[in-house]
Length: 183
Image 1: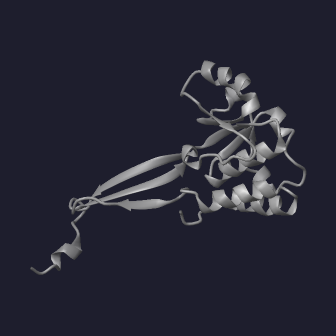
Image 2 (image 1 turned 120 degrees about the horizontal axis):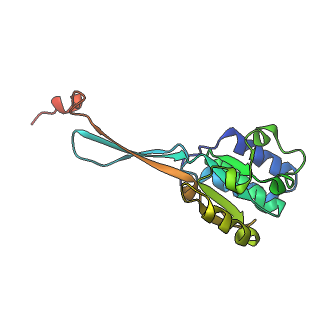
């Protein structure tokens, strides 16, 4: 669907998952790598004298909370695929498997839910009841909480910000190719 735009940390996680018996995670990471709008820029149709583009950028910090290693790996895969920074609470940090590549570990930040400054939270279903009130009571922007499971894809589009840009090319000197058209 999309051109492959996977960050190096996702590639490292994918290789690690394949060699350490996490086949389902490897499949999900492969899917994330190939069906990911991260860093994609589309040229949209528009009138003459105007250039319209739509691009997708990371949102920043994504809070990840899980009580199983496989669900955590799924959350990390989705977060890294979209160029975001995974933020994990202490109890989820304890689930990180030994031997996880440095490219992945170096991207992870440890912080608790109320102090993480995340825009989105990926929370394993069994933990939803304990985290929703924490995010609801915090000041600032509303944090979207997305329920995740170890074998279900995380919707990557929710982890990205859309950027629409409209450039008036006539104000920038016009479209020179229009001058060469003959009637």
